[in-house]
Length: 125
Image (cartoon, rainbow, N blue to C red; front, side, top):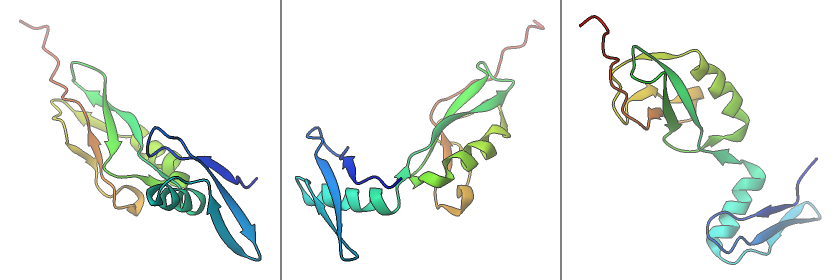
């Protein structure tokens, strides 16, 4: 099913932008600014999202570290990227901004950590 309306997320106004097709050409109506029109065109033709998830940490003070892509990736690649990250384990300590996967799925986006995770203290004192 093809959607014909989206709510712009660029500012608090939340304009309802509609895509109208006539004779093979598209027109966008309802946007309050040119940024909204540009965003709506991309949302209809090539939607992208920032991926946020977690990666397992071995010997860390916590079991998982939050990660995100450095830029939006195509929406249709999100689940494939999650599958790749599900199989990755990093060794503590982990610093903020550590690159976990470079250029995931050839999207030009790296997957980086968003939190520091220290090494688990040994119980053998």
